[in-house]
Image 1 (cartoon, rainbow, N blue to C red):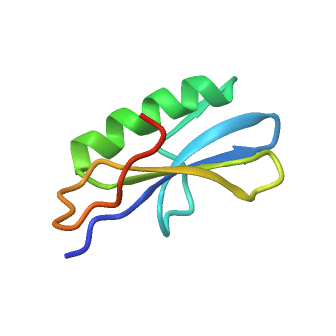
Image 2 (tube, helix red, strand yellow):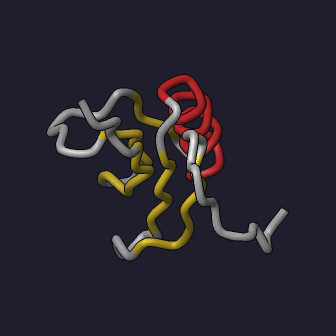
Length: 77
Protein backbone atom coordinates (compact mmCIF):
# COMPACT_ATOMS: atom_id res chain seq x y z
CA UNK A 1 0.00 0.00 0.00
CA UNK A 2 1.32 3.43 -0.94
CA UNK A 3 2.06 5.88 1.83
CA UNK A 4 -0.13 8.98 1.87
CA UNK A 5 1.41 12.42 1.60
CA UNK A 6 0.68 14.80 4.48
CA UNK A 7 -0.67 18.23 3.49
CA UNK A 8 -0.61 21.48 5.49
CA UNK A 9 -3.57 23.45 4.14
CA UNK A 10 -5.52 26.58 5.05
CA UNK A 11 -8.93 25.85 6.56
CA UNK A 12 -10.97 28.92 7.42
CA UNK A 13 -8.81 31.07 9.70
CA UNK A 14 -6.72 28.06 10.80
CA UNK A 15 -4.21 25.63 9.31
CA UNK A 16 -5.00 21.92 9.02
CA UNK A 17 -2.81 18.83 8.77
CA UNK A 18 -4.50 16.35 6.44
CA UNK A 19 -3.41 13.02 4.98
CA UNK A 20 -3.85 12.95 1.19
CA UNK A 21 -7.38 11.95 0.20
CA UNK A 22 -8.80 12.49 3.69
CA UNK A 23 -11.79 14.78 4.19
CA UNK A 24 -11.08 15.35 7.88
CA UNK A 25 -7.84 16.86 9.23
CA UNK A 26 -5.68 15.05 11.75
CA UNK A 27 -5.20 18.35 13.59
CA UNK A 28 -5.90 22.10 13.33
CA UNK A 29 -3.56 24.92 14.36
CA UNK A 30 -3.67 28.70 14.76
CA UNK A 31 -0.48 29.25 12.74
CA UNK A 32 1.03 27.70 9.64
CA UNK A 33 4.29 27.13 11.52
CA UNK A 34 2.58 25.04 14.20
CA UNK A 35 0.78 23.02 11.51
CA UNK A 36 4.09 22.47 9.67
CA UNK A 37 5.72 21.14 12.84
CA UNK A 38 2.85 18.72 13.46
CA UNK A 39 2.78 17.68 9.80
CA UNK A 40 6.54 17.14 9.75
CA UNK A 41 6.34 14.79 12.75
CA UNK A 42 3.55 12.82 11.08
CA UNK A 43 5.40 12.65 7.75
CA UNK A 44 8.54 11.36 9.50
CA UNK A 45 6.52 8.75 11.39
CA UNK A 46 4.81 7.58 8.18
CA UNK A 47 7.95 7.98 6.04
CA UNK A 48 5.96 10.06 3.55
CA UNK A 49 6.12 13.49 1.94
CA UNK A 50 5.09 16.74 3.61
CA UNK A 51 3.34 19.15 1.21
CA UNK A 52 2.97 22.74 2.47
CA UNK A 53 0.39 24.99 0.82
CA UNK A 54 0.11 28.79 0.65
CA UNK A 55 -2.98 30.62 1.98
CA UNK A 56 -4.40 30.60 -1.58
CA UNK A 57 -4.02 26.80 -1.81
CA UNK A 58 -0.96 26.68 -4.10
CA UNK A 59 1.84 24.33 -3.14
CA UNK A 60 4.64 26.32 -1.51
CA UNK A 61 7.09 23.59 -0.54
CA UNK A 62 7.63 19.83 -0.23
CA UNK A 63 9.87 17.72 1.99
CA UNK A 64 10.29 13.98 1.65
CA UNK A 65 10.82 11.81 4.71
CA UNK A 66 10.54 8.46 2.96
CA UNK A 67 13.14 6.06 1.65
CA UNK A 68 13.82 7.40 -1.85
CA UNK A 69 16.27 5.18 -3.80
CA UNK A 70 17.20 8.05 -6.15
CA UNK A 71 16.77 11.29 -4.18
CA UNK A 72 17.25 14.67 -5.86
CA UNK A 73 19.90 16.99 -4.48
CA UNK A 74 18.49 19.00 -1.62
CA UNK A 75 19.41 22.63 -2.24
CA UNK A 76 17.47 23.98 0.76
CA UNK A 77 19.30 22.26 3.63
